[in-house]
Image 1: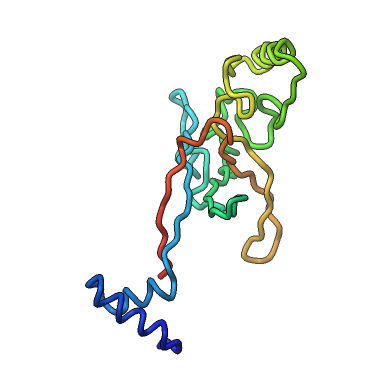
Image 2 (image 1 turned 90 degrees about the vertical axis):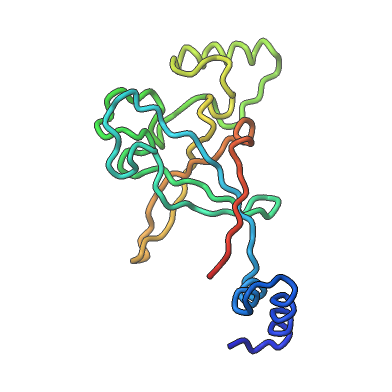
Length: 185
């Protein structure tokens, strides 16, 4: 039962205006739908290896972690699978350098260069150190379209658990973002 008579009145008006049921109109007024931004990040390339049984080769858990961005937009971020640590493989055969969450991968998070020559030298060094990353790949994510960042959360018993989030790259992953309307029941 709704105690707020203004909400009841608005629900009746909305029901008459849109043709939806009174209960649906009331739900949308009490808990209005909101937009959440979701990134469809690429899954790891397994090259025929056996997929991880926990994530079926996707490299991420099915549940996601939510955060507010600086523009106050709720964004869902994937959590790296704890079984395979993000590589998607069950046996870890053929895992490249930096394919697991927590391993060094690619360039530093915020590189700064004083000259184009310095940036070019860093790209060549990156290509030599991380052979599977082309020199033309994104400087921030190494062409993976996301970076792993550390996070901690609480389990059902209040114990702290460490996890890694697959944070979309701010430079090259904008095209992977889609808006999703969420309604609370």
